[in-house]
Length: 242
Image 1 (cartoon, rainbow, N blue to C red):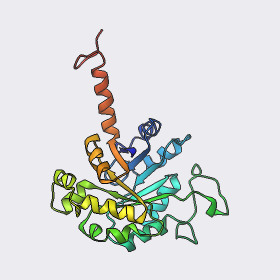
Image 2: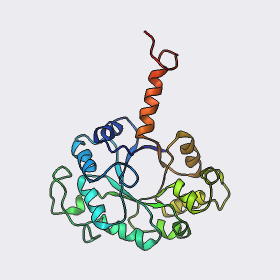
Image 3: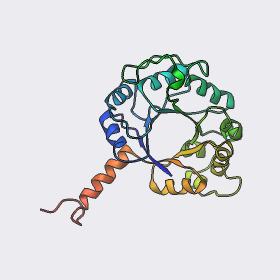
Image 4: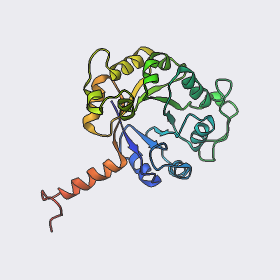
């Protein structure tokens, strides 16, 4: 399992600290988190020694927005609310330079030097989110999209869309269970099955379904856990010993 952390606070230095903490990957949330154009730009400007892949969940599938995040230096994108194979294909094309896509060239100074042969440049990781009934119904076709690297499940939104509680969604391990169907579609297409967990308990459940890229905590959760470890440093609750 590739254990990741999901950053929502929008603080560039904290995000870089999380990247350097020894996890497998980091996600920056520009949809429901506090990362905006300025804080994303600053985060990647500060990223002098890349340690692990840093992906950005973008606001939408808008091609201009996708290209701009990649220009900052993001290693990949996670695109929400994708319902059809056509939408997934458009996302892939927006992340690739011609002749394989429609992305225009223009990194912002710290994202790489110009090379005429862009085919030699590493292609970003492209992920789309499965979080609606429509996406679940078309999941096999979406997973088969050429150039797509990962399906990423938002279990909170998916549970809402299916009229289920999050607990019931995670507990359903029947052959036709939604989480199993998505993971199986990824396996069939030979792409990564990823998901947001937000806790180690949910991460374990998702791993059992076959998900391998899992956001097991958030930046806020890591801060809370760190503070808790200090509180218990001397075996006391609430304060350090003298």
